[in-house]
Length: 85
Image (tube, rainbow, N blue to C red; front, side, top):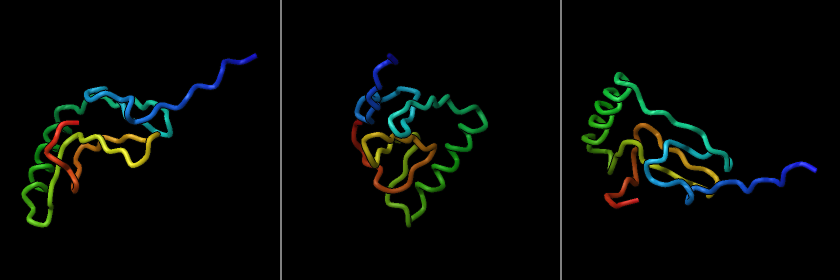
């Protein structure tokens, strides 16, 4: 007999600060951005955040549109709340 099937992970099981995204219930390791990328994210985020057409922006914000998926794009635009989580 083989191993029992694993239950897929859900976004609510990923803790803030964990270096992972989630794709169809499977962990995807997301390593830190290097110096050049970090600088680019800072500049890009600043430009977007000051655009009058942008309601809100953030960096490395966890976004989950369904329980088995979690993404943390370098820069997010729209619906970025100023709240913990």
